[in-house]
Amino acid sequence: MSGSSKERGHGDLLRSLEFLHPESLALSQQGMAEWVAALSPNDEEPLINEAVGKRVRWVAGTGWVAHLTRL
Image 1: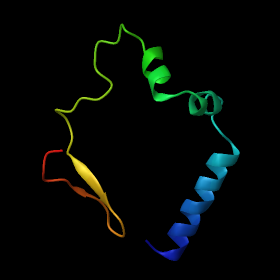
Image 2 (image 1 turned 90 degrees about the vertical axis):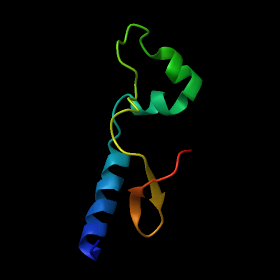
Image 3 (image 1 turned 180 degrees about the horizontal axis):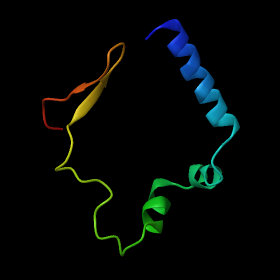
C-alpha cells in the first residue's frame, strides 16, 4: 500500500469515527449475548453461512490469506 493510500485510509477511518452511524453507540454498549438475543428469531437464514466463502486468517504485514487447516 502506498503512502498516499495509507493516508487516505487513515483519513477515512478518522471521518468514520467522527461521524458515527446513529446506532453505533447503542450497539457498542451491548454485549455479544444481548446482541444475539436481539436478533429476530424469525430469520430464515443463519447470520453466517459457513458453506459459502473461504476460511481465511490474518497475517501481519501480509493481510488476509487462505487458512488451510480446520480450527
